[in-house]
Image (cartoon, rainbow, N blue to C red; front, side):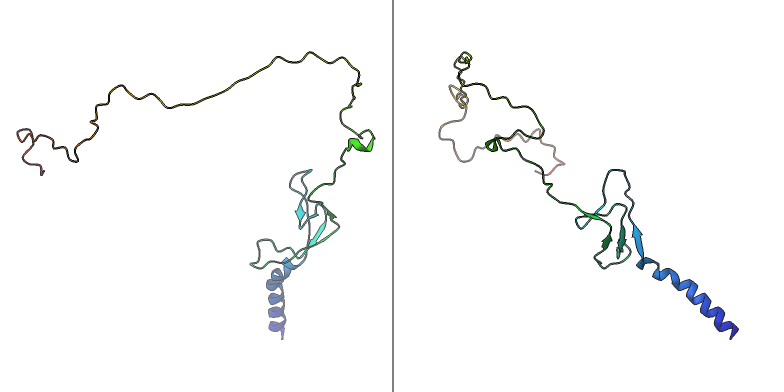
Length: 149
């Protein structure tokens, strides 16, 4: 019976590491100011349960406890001049009066571009109607006799 108890204790001690991956993790970002986003939730300093990472070949949807939702398209305020209100921030827009003195009109400006082919030579070396095959003269005296033709 004593051997059975030692064997049982040894079996429990060796197999306890197999159940270690099923717990929870606290997410700590690698760089300050850079959030860890899991399925649209900022999981920085939150508890994540069911995240197996690269340990298994199956995908498990993790559950984030304590995270906050991150909007993929941030909702920013817009300025609509037709509303008649000043914007909350930005440059100060000053509308000039209608009866102000206008500046002198600018001088006229016109620019154009064109392209054309290069001019042809006055006379070409190629005949107008060349023969289909041109035979070159053979000089057998220069040809090395040990090379095939």
